[in-house]
Length: 98
Image (cartoon, rainbow, N blue to C red; front, side, top):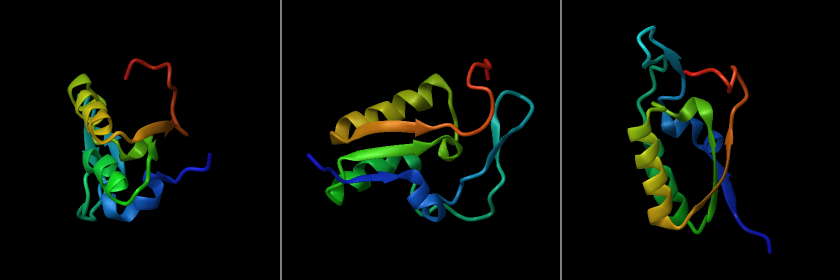
């Protein structure tokens, strides 16, 4: 059965904060100067509101990857009934501890 899906890449400019680089202390710093019009945590609800039931998230749209934030994101996805189809990781070493 066909279904509608959206990638966070399609929302790249709306997410504004799209380029995060390590800050040297285990965190990340925002390298974008664009102000976000939508936060990543709000993407699942926005997709559901528009009848889109599947999302893909790009790694560079994650402002943080700590357990607390990932739990919030998981909850935001679960609360809307939207399916997370994939997380695009196209850089780095996914086996690295950071």
